[in-house]
Image (spheres, rainbow, N blue to C red):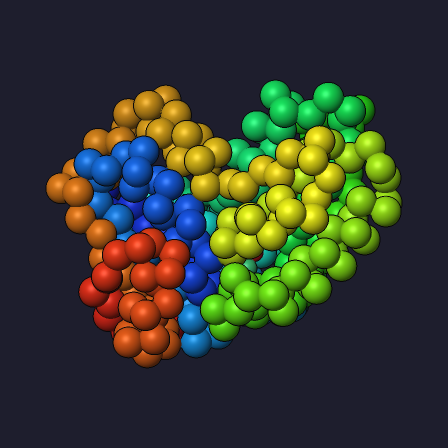
Length: 279
Ligand code: DGL
């Protein structure tokens, strides 16, 4: 595979499973003219409880696959992959194997937006066990806003609730309330809560129900879409390497039928999916 060519291609969007579809939906709404390829590693999801080494290895394989499909730019639409693999891919792999291609994550654009939202400077972060343990949000927030305080809460049950389509039912209330209560018990002046997992927007109604009224939940989709648009505006050299025929392809490592049924929950449309193997 020649990774030095600069031939224009679609924008790659990667997630461990379906969660990244919440990001893709927002990106397509904001920039419908571009071509996209979404890759969900559904066969190996969830990533949230996996080690650094494994998340890095899996994410690297997915990025290389998207490069193979012609993507010059890949978005890791997964907080767990952004937290555990992005830096190594950007600093170790790209300079060596594909110095002109770019891989971006979802944590930085989310953190950049919270300065305009919080009054108290006390930020809650809800995420997978992997994302919370990595402390990526804490580190990124401290870089931009050294005075802010950050409180994390891992919500290991939330992704399985969404992936099993249980998120709208009353059983989900128990887990959502429990994690929100734990988070808010850490500091009652938290006024901004980052939904640091791309699955969580599907739980937004329940999150709102259990968060105190004055606390603002922050989903990432629009923030990441705005930041990507801005990135392409600031990098016309990359923009011309992204094709614009308004198409979207879907790839999964699991069964295409399963993917297509679940994807309609996230995107409210029927999608054509192909199965691929990552290695
Ligand atoms: N959607 C992924 C994220 O944003 C988490 C799903 C998983 O655990 O694989 O972190």
